[in-house]
Picture 1: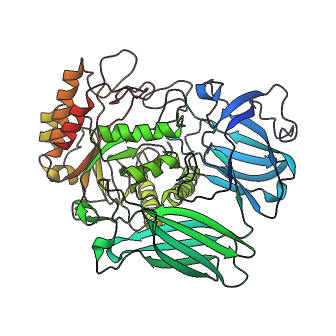
Picture 2: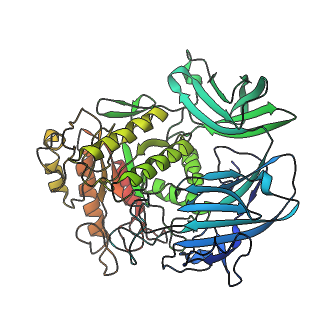
Length: 576
């Protein structure tokens, strides 16, 4: 994997990182388009360090006041060739419009998915100008996750993110190139299904050379016929009769196969490298299976915030450090909460063996526009992150946010069913959770959020599983496990939020009573964690959370990634 490469699952050699200093301007009166700022950028411009949003200190601006429209511009020296030039933005919040040399190049809506434009026809030899206009809002219709929609932070909602917040980069490709790649491992048959989309239909029958490597050793070569724009092939990685020849991906042994594709279309070839993990996620009764063996998930909630850069990781090393901090505390996975993380994070989870639940950032109102935006953006996210073996679960909704009346409202219930089945149509292998926390409709896993601080009360509450699953009682004193009209069908059960213990402070909050010191923290942590682990029908847990986030100070680590307690003790409790 190229260090710093923003898309590690689909790598080419010829790329240019456009992060760095850009010209920047607020457009509070929304006059920029009318005044053609893509041709004449304001003279009172500021400078901003991309990819950090203006609200962060690493951006060089550090202003937390909401501004609905912001503009970016920078120049770059390019040479016009016969090849195609693609402009990629890994994330811009919320609607982004791009011009190249004053010409409209494209528009995208949605904060959490990558988007790309072919800018070949707009570039010229010499100095080229790229301009981006980003428009955000405080609307609860748009998927916003944990970004506040009020002037000040409140509850568990934090400073908003506006504009470019992930890497911007250019990529040079041949005229005929591989546009998309989908990799689906089939562990039982020792094969991988490869689905390729070309940027256009071949004029004749072309070929795609496919090489598969393990530990840098070439193990097989295939030649795939490319007569259409969409190509599917099943590739063997070993003989199914000798399964021990397959290098199986797991948290204990995260083996990866590298794959090299070369498309010979016309006078030039397009070479792309990627990788995949031979692993299988399935459900049998109340058990979640990884590679046909029961998997007990020891997860921790991860919101992915940093003091100086908020949602944007300050560096790739910071992403690696967070993964190592999680592993050091004895967890085998993270529930990435209300955020779609930088893809380099997922790639390092692939390589280090950390399981990931990928979760959709929430909307906070239910209406036609929110349904449409949620659906479109969720499927972008699923498609872009599909190939990562570390992702073992899709989480579409959280705690009835954006579907507040899902317990009894038929329209909201049908919406959740639709998202479930749409996700399963694209990905048949991974479990999909609908409404993490409570009030499930259709869901492969039943997940429960409970911040009870007494281990004894916790144990008593969950002693009788049927009382919870049959909606005899509101399990956490105010919510039911299943939505009205739906019944529990024997799915695995996970306590997917608990804990949230905070030390005594007047400057932030945690769940329940704050503790006075490390001894009290560890005693409470141990009691509630052991109460969950003694539930013989539970398939795992998720502790809240990795680090403090702004006013929410219930992390195992501070926002600076300093441990609050002895992590060896936390690890011992988790693994006992």
